[in-house]
Image (cartoon, rainbow, N blue to C red; front, side, top):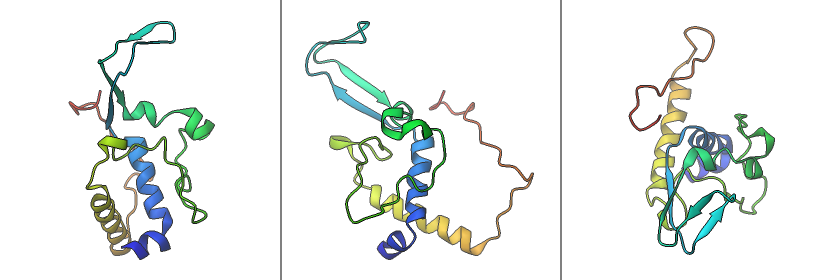
Length: 140
C-alpha cells in the first residue's frame, strides 16, 4: 500500500481533503492559565476547551482564501520534505492522535481505488447532490 500512496498521491490527498471538509472530530485542551479571548471570552485555568474540527479546518490563516475549494493537490507532497499539517486534524492531534489512522487510511484508499477500477460510476442526475446532515444527531 505504501507504493500506492507514493505512486498515486492524489488518492491520499483526496482522502485528507474529504476528512477536512466532512470530519466531525473535536480537539480538547485543558486551559493552562486564565485567558481573556477577544476581550470577551474568559477561559478559566483548569477549564476544558473543546474546538470543533470544522472550525479548525476552515481557518483562512492556514488554508488561505481557497479554504472552501476542493483542491485535490492541497496535501500532495512535492518534495521529500515533510509538509506541515498544523491545520489538518482529520485523525486528532498531538496527545489525541488516533493510533488506527494509518490502517483506516489504507483501507479507505484501497476501497476507493477498487471501486474506481471495478465500476463505471456515473451520476444519476448528471449533477452532484451534496448529502444532508439534517437527520444526524451528531452534526447540527
